[in-house]
Every structure is written in C-alpha cells, then in structure tokens.
Picture 1 (cartoon, rainbow, N blue to C red):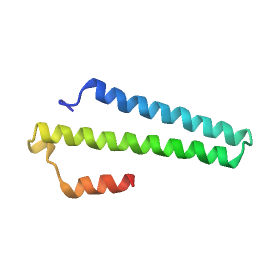
Picture 2: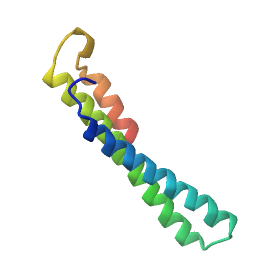
Picture 3: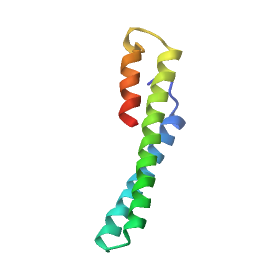
Picture 4: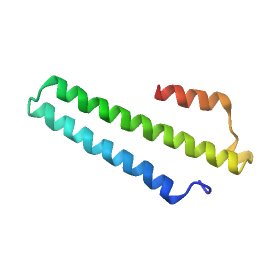
Length: 88
C-alpha cells in the first residue's frame, strides 16, 4: 500500500488492539461468571470495533486504488460489494 500512510495503518492497528483487549475482557468476564447483560454489552463493543477496522481497511484499499489506478490495483465492484457485505 504505497499511498496509504503509516498514520492511517496505525489507526487501524490501534482499533484492532483495542478490540483484542476488549475480547480478553469478555473471556475474563465469562470465566468470572459475570452478568450476561454485561458480557453481551462487551461483545457488542468488540463486534463494532472489528467492523470499523474492516471498513477502514476496505476504505484504505479503495483510496489506494483510486489514487494510483494500475493493473495491480484494479478496483472490482463485485469484489468491493462482497467485502462490504462480509462485514454487514
């Protein structure tokens, strides 16, 4: 990814690391026998964080494809739809 900045990728990595920490918290909550509602709330937060990271990755790839369109970065509409739908 030549046109994607280090800061942009750093942001995605930070989001994924937060989700990883949240997921570890969910595991601990289950092991401790915490309330179901609290566990589901945390799982929802993990789900949102992962979804946002996925959308960021897709957006960064689109940015790269649009800023440097060449044969190696062909923007395929069907593939983009499939990627977006996999996150829905």
